[in-house]
Image (cartoon, rainbow, N blue to C red; front, side):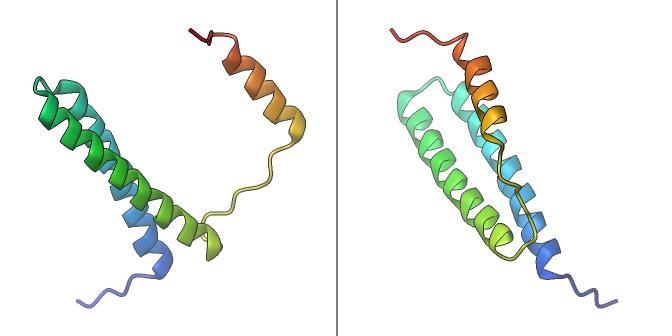
Length: 89
């Protein structure tokens, strides 16, 4: 059985894989007792985030992951909502 996958399916699978990988590296970093291992896990997490952005950007460029422009009113509402719980130290 020869199944042929589309670019959209392949990139979608890659994006989901990256999302899962970042969750696992984050969990691993949270559970580390040793500083050197935690630092390694955080470095790997950062690299996975970079790969995730690359895959997302490729999908977006190819029209596989369209993102509509945000309305300025909704952006301001989100800023207001999330700034309430944050106070600079």
